[in-house]
Length: 124
Image (cartoon, rainbow, N blue to C red; front, side):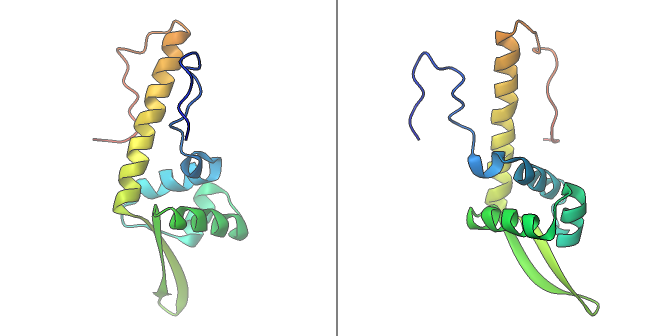
């Protein structure tokens, strides 16, 4: 990625296109809140996606090393389990910190003072 020019403070070069897409941001948010993972059907419901859309987004996240997908059975029924990888969790938390700073910078530019209010996305 090229560095933004000095006169382009809002080029947002740090935004990760893999994570920043709306559906994938929702998937990662769901998975970070469920460290043991979520079943495909649960993710589908939580994120409001179709089977095909969910499949495609999970494929992108898996190729990027952010999620692991395993297939098994629960009782006699097949089940697909999706889990955030350790590095995926770290990358996503770093990404949330970047977004938090982006919001702070935008608020500062707009003349708002968020210095006393910490955006608490996740514990830690």
